[in-house]
Amino acid sequence: MREDAVGPNRDFGISLYKELAAGNPQENIFFSPISLMFALGIALLGSRGETEKQLKSVMKIENMINADMHQGLFKLKSFLEDEKNPHELHIANRLFIEKSETLRGGFSKDCQKYYGSDPEKVEFMNDAPACVAKINRWVEKLTKGKIKNLISAADVSSSTKLILINAIVFKGTWMTKFYETESGEFSISPGSTVGIKFMIIQKLQAKYCDCKKLKSQILELPYKDKSMSFVIILPDVEQTNIENVEKKLDSGVLSEINEKLTETKLKIRLPKFSMTKESKVTEKLQTLGLTDLFIKGKADLYNMNLKLDLYVSKLVHKAFIEVNEEGTVAAAATGVQLGTRSSSIYLDFNANHPFIFYIKDNKLQTILFMGKFVKP
Picture (spheres, rainbow, N blue to C red):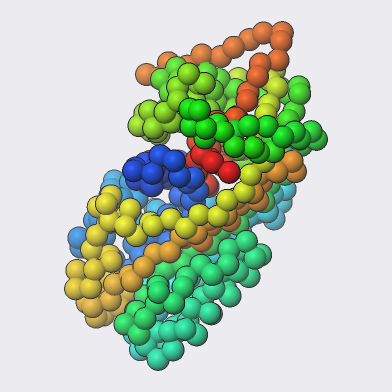
């Protein structure tokens, strides 16, 4: 992927994370920024005018040529899915469109060229329930059963014209596995705890730093061959409000953290957890400024379809993650002051209270998944 497209991925991911977190401080979050970038990229292929402008603004690519963005996503997909990688990662995109609609030949060709997918015609008008079952089977098969029932009967009706679906699955094995577990208390909020299983590594040299601006400890745990990493932003114990960390998050902070991470001797205590989250991304994208795409009569998808009444009924995004002793399984369907510590002793990294996390590709620094763990 072009270097100038990596920044937009981070910016988009952080802006959407903040929208998902707004008003829900005690809720877990998990989603895939890059997965949604692929889905929005397909919409961008077919858009023009104000709809195109809004898409580019939300995707943080206002200054990029569209062809460069599509080519960049194509190269990224090829890079991430390289069979030589020790991790398992699969990405699939599909646009399901009402059978009676006619697509431009150039649009279908570009969908295949850049996103490896041909739009699929289905009979929303005549048999919506069958369409729901078909889409769910496709997603469940791709995610190897991790994402079930992505859409429901409530998401589709006889008036549905277009649904965008993107699914991504990641399975990574830790470079250093956790061989020890123990039961302990996880602090949900001051004075409120819940029992949970913790994974422990007594002695490990890993990338770590203190971020004074975020008032947090940062830990990067690599997956096998170090091509991908799981990064944790753990607020300092005295900082009981994770919202203060979220407000200060931006692409610049993440970039500087990445530069300052230093090999440090650590004792690590990390919750063993899993979660499935369906995010209301349509509403959140609208809040960020992407409104016309979802409104009949305002969406301009002329480069997709000759009619001007076509619009995206819904963009559904559901994500799954499991973090255990072996590694991580994840799936989804659509100046900073820093300091490092050096010592002969092993520092404690005890994730026994809410934290932010993300999974990234280490070569390009692309954020594949992002989330917050607040409660089991």
